[in-house]
Length: 230
Image (cartoon, rainbow, N blue to C red):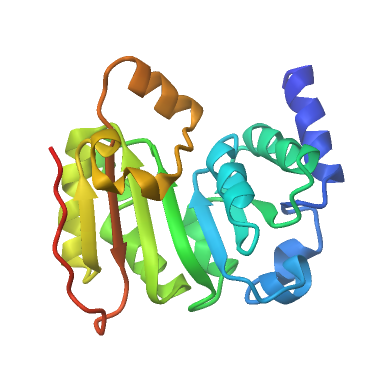
């Protein structure tokens, strides 16, 4: 382990906005994020595979009346988001260090209002399908932790992964679907507030278009037209 990583792991251990295996809240936080961590009743928004937390921190700045949690297994990555949030004085941000496979161990049914997936590994090979973050086994978990009419967002530069994800959210009963294959040229551009992750900046600067979708949970949602901007 490099000294830099050791330093970041030490930062996580000392940071109150990082929940990880060595801390008491790690085993007791499920269903109690508002009461035991945020100390308010505001909606909870997750960013899965948050990396360095650029999106988590950016959203928290834009929406001080919501609680944001970045989830990632890489401690050296979330340390950067943790430190950024602290330097900005953001009390509405937390980072959970865990594998996304264990999401239901940390969030009870209907505890989350929104869920963002930003530029995940597309896992392109057929044998990797079960690891895609929009595989049905993951989407079923998302439907469980999201409130009725909760929102799922996805951003990716990978057209094959995006097409796969569109198919799967439809199959799993998500609705009110809106999507675009060129976010920055579409009316949906305002929804992401101009926040870009490091990878998104790299992709965009190289001329890649950004795919985006949002959809809702719950069979009682009203149907809305699909927006498809090429």
